[in-house]
Image (cartoon, rainbow over all chains, first blue to last red; front, side):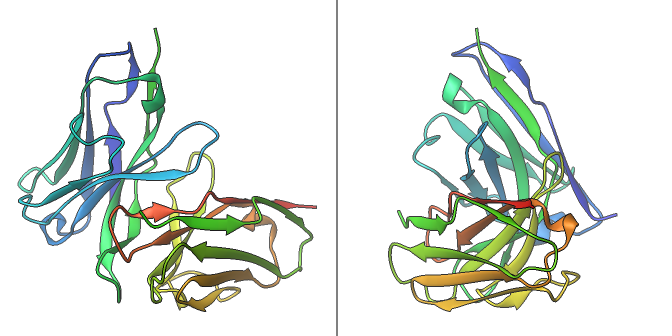
Length: 122
Length: 107
């Protein structure tokens, strides 16, 4: 089955770190650019970061630049998000998403996981 | 950043109705506009890509249109299973940005 499964979420205190994982299966993981997207409670979707197929190119939203690091392991078919200096504003469901290029220079996301909840609270 | 303004923020309609959601970009994005359906506890699902292309497996009652800065998303013959929140997303430039979402309810 073609799927993405996120893990690693949980309750952390402000200032702490957390590492999210996304396990890919059913497709050739190394052939796709990947992204992380989150949804805070009562809020809309927010794109956070992307990584190229080889892992050599990454981009970040301003809201997480310098605090979050995206990476991937194409042998383990896994995507990661290292999150440091977490604050209450980072409380959200975090999704990994597979990017496809349509006509545009960037992606639409044709495959998503169900998400993992990160709660930052003291 | 490209701002995506989606309206309405919520919508109530009856089974069988036609429903239309609009999305306006703060600058010209050609047809690089995509639409998603989100249901609680489920993986988000792309319905339309590049403004008007129906994703494989998506029912034909869903459609999209527009170019430049103004886009529409339509559901014909609304079904109970269409209860969800819908988002537009631009793929013209980084950062990728989404509209604020439209929550659709059935009367």
